[in-house]
Length: 635
Ligand code: ZN
Image 1: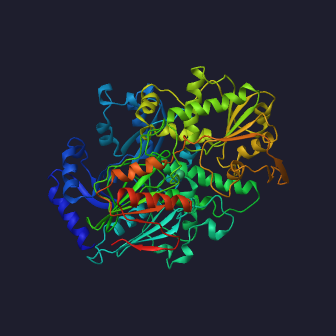
Image 2: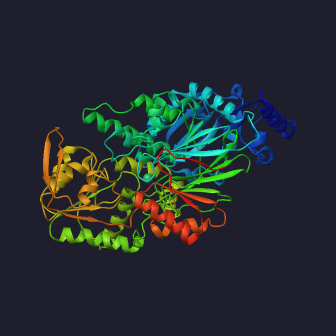
């Protein structure tokens, strides 16, 4: 044991009351676990823990000594006996690695102390920590996949968490602070986001995506080949959100020998599992071998350490991490790195929305200190001003009504995650208000699964949605007007003559059912392709949007098909999960006075240039626009 660890443990021992019953202190990833034979001491007096945390400034978790832990089956029976039937338990996952049981129930509000449910008493009896979650009314396969992986890897995860902890809580090698970042992807472009942050003590990778629009390997993946870095040297990977341009290359790290932790929020873990698995499926259907396989996805899941928003967590000997709401998609986070005990702070925005949407509150702008801000600039041009949400919704409904009135069909290609759920809320509301002409809305692709994941994490949604889901037991994403297409055979119904609205993935017409519908619909001038999200250059969606009159595609049987585009094509701007130009400037200006430099990334070259120039001219903050491969010394 090193000096730092010894000091921390001695401090803890000093602060423990004499009857604490603590028999063992051990690392569990970024937390210090105290194993006690007398959990009631802590359960009945939360001040003990908060005092220790305040003094040692490390995360602490109280565990019941394994000798006192009931075996799984016995514990399950006790829980089923104590939990009122009306709460309706759907899943119970005993995770040995964390000594924790996740209990999913339909009605979590019935499990409160005023309803006579005493969690502490049960913890004391069974010796497992208890986490109660709201069960989604639609079961999510991705969450089941995550649970299954956690269950089948519990022994290796136990060892993994201990070794991660030993790394985090080791002595520092030097007292000096030097910080450098290297742009590996997502600079002067959108796609394959990746940044390496290096100090004298640690190497941290932020995001690890692919470029969905690129065709050549040197444009598709982060440029690890430009630097001298062995994957074993990376201490931690942090993921801002689940979109593949931020996560798509992650399993490849595991394939080639990375064995460290990945930090992200809990919904990001489930959504990333969904998207990474789907990428394999799509490639397999096209007869290709993909970049990675399910075993690499499994390694990703078992190496994930999830964090809620706002929690300060040590991730290396000199870096603390806080994730905060980014307002972009479910679980999306800004990444705040606090380096060297106050030496420097980096805030990386990831993709963010600095405005309220129907799904999420605006991105957090409250950071105690930010010396270096790294901001995205997807909509960084002066002309990138989006209409207000209200106007957007009206335009959207009009754009649909025009087509329905003429008897045409509207195809809305959507990314499964984010916009789809928002559109479902909008369509349902306007059809109820009778402002949208009544017609069947067909939904196909990963939307159903992504919606199930949204319903499983209501605490990440707006207060209004949370109340509807948790307190009123509603599913706000469901409507009698929606028909979910589970199998391609059912597409005939959607393609039958007459008006219809079709919402299908993928959002950029790169694979998925949206491409099949596009091929059927593009030739008829009555129809309309209605885009609601950003189209990466190089994708089919972008070519259609830019006015292509003819495109050739591979159909379901792998045959080349030439498609004439006669239908209408329209883009509605305001639904974006990204900040528009004004919102970007407003966000940065909120941090004025704190920020010493702004580094602009995640935007086409022109957008990066414009946003960087505007920030230095109007806000007086020095800016940088690095190219891929550039290293910048921050301290
Ligand atoms: Zn994104």
